Image (cartoon, rainbow, N blue to C red):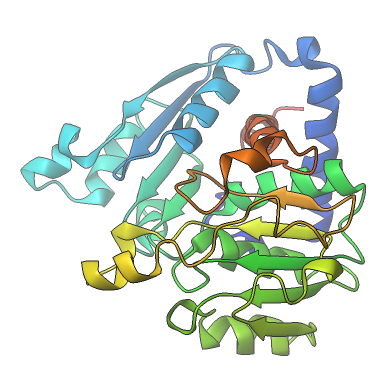
Length: 304
């Protein structure tokens, strides 16, 4: 029995296999429509979510399976004081696979110690969000045709952004990838990721506070929102929330084949006018999320 806690739980070869299965699902969806008939997915979301939870549910339903679960901690027995371990052990008696989101870092690892079925980490605090990373990798592969030889700009909240942390870890395993780290000083990428991932793997990177400075070099621009729920001080959030706003003017020097991504939800960091630009891939990215989760469910349930 395997789980997905961190993107590094899968080898590059396994990730590439998931991407290929996802592409086959995109092109030949009907042949997958009953692959999970009789199987149940539990979505246990101790923290609010729209895209990730519904994406998992849509993925399982599209595979012919069924779904049960809850969308907030207040509607689970944890509100009565039940431990995460007990909740997971109970739910794993009902379901064949679990997708779990929790505000506390490491909670899915705790859950994995008691579960009877595979667990997918659907986000744990500011730590990891591996299925968003798989979504991002499929998006890049589809939009750019490769995962090698790319310059990726990461803009916004690089300190608390779990999607950014996971993406850097994943892309550092591909060839000739470079990063441009764009953030205010207060939201810069944590030192441990710079040391343990970028520098350890000799990945080239540049740090800047300017969105425009390296715009003409980027193959990917990955925008993130400043996350209010990660701040202890509301004044700091208000000061930083609109630090970067991507608009058509700022894209003036960008490459014609730039791919603009965002894990969503968007607040103000991408102007609505950018949505009509063919380089805006973030809503296509949402669709890719369903397909990669379908492939992941099949892999963890060992369904060919």
